[in-house]
Amino acid sequence: MNVEETIATWEAEETRIREKLGDADVIPLSDLTTRSGMDIFNAMFAGELPHPPIGLTLDYTPIHMEKGIAVFQGRPKRHHYNPLGTVHGGWFCTLLDSAVGCAVHTLLPAGKTYTTLEIKVNMVRALTVATPLVRAEGKVIHAGRRTATAEGKIIGPDGKLYAHATTTCIILDV
Image 1 (cartoon, helix red, strand yellow):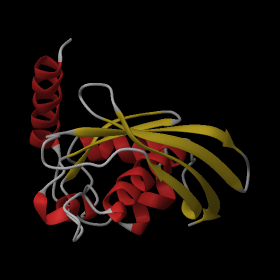
Image 2 (image 1 turned 180 degrees about the vertical axis):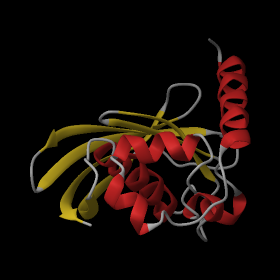
Image 3 (image 1 turned 180 degrees about the horizontal axis):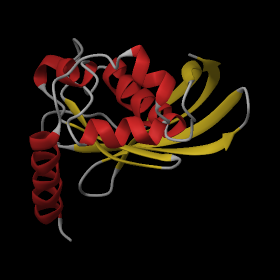
Image 4 (image 1 turned 45 degrees about the vertical axis):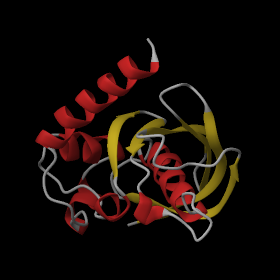
């Protein structure tokens, strides 16, 4: 696929997903105690549970979840810019934190949650509004009883790498 075809495919996929997503809000505690991570994401994509409000703030959307993998799609906008005229590093970091953290969450049983202990992000290419869409892909490297590690990357529709990250998450009881 060329860049235009990839953008069209990604936009169509996002439109299809957004039509099913419910409101943006936090997940009720009762659902965290009774549903596995994958059950939560399946309910989110079916519109039964809310999707995270941070996606509205920073213009990104959950696209795909499977065991050990999470994909988000973001739209770099001018209001994400730093004073130097490129997308702020915090946008990269937040998008990647969502992807790698949710990849970990997909593996958790009911009654377990997680939080980021550490994240390391390398921005290898600037982002501007000239790149209309990017995808952040997170993949679990190791999932233990108390900690999990994952890696992620942000890629453009042309396959270019914009950033990559690793994380360590602590696994907690709800």
